[in-house]
Length: 253
Ligand code: CNA
Image (cartoon, rainbow, N blue to C red; front, top):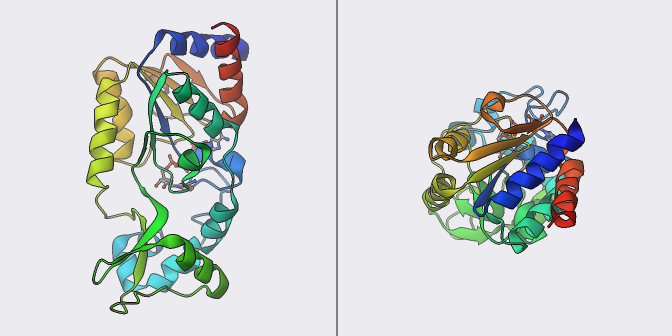
């Protein structure tokens, strides 16, 4: 059954020329970064998301945000792309994949070598002062934060620095969103990988794709509300299945 599904996805890929991958935290769990919604992921244990991970909470108590994000930051800076990220790089190199739309902030797609990546929820490459909007490269700021666990401040005005990740209550970065919408409207096959599809407006993009006639493949450990709309649904580890799909594709090319 699983082998048939893998074959079927390889066939769909072969027939498609404008594939878009839509990824979530689940593609990075095999790299050791916990997702938000799997049981035991731990990211929401003992915290209120609206207090630690909203822009209102951030402005009110930035130290609470930084305390919450500390373990994720530590894991993310040490994480490496896994075979699922690598498979998407290969698919792009072969000319099948046009874009990766990701909700992840971990930058593992670009670090793996994917070229066209829309980071809908931002990234950890930069940080911005919430007072004067000065932008800083995040690397030295993160390095210092990992040592002292303290809220970083702007060297120009003393304001609080926020990593360029999108918190609840913030707009998505407009250019990334428009690029992703365009890719979703123009794809012939969207492959959803490791997303609960519960966070809007990102989760609306697969519907944009299906309304424009695209087929859907879903590769996720758990059920999603779009499973019924997908041509193929595989409930398994993306880092195991994506390389197998690539192998089938390249054997039968
Ligand atoms: P989510 O809501 O945590 O869902 C993740 C989904 O992935 C779940 O349905 C899991 O069943 C599934 N999953 C977990 N591991 C695997 C695996 N190995 N193979 C296949 N499926 C798997 O995450 P979403 O991305 O849907 O939610 C969006 C949030 C989570 C965004 O705001 C992200 O910024 C945020 N997030 C990002 C990261 C990251 O950058 N790596 C980590 C944690 C949370």
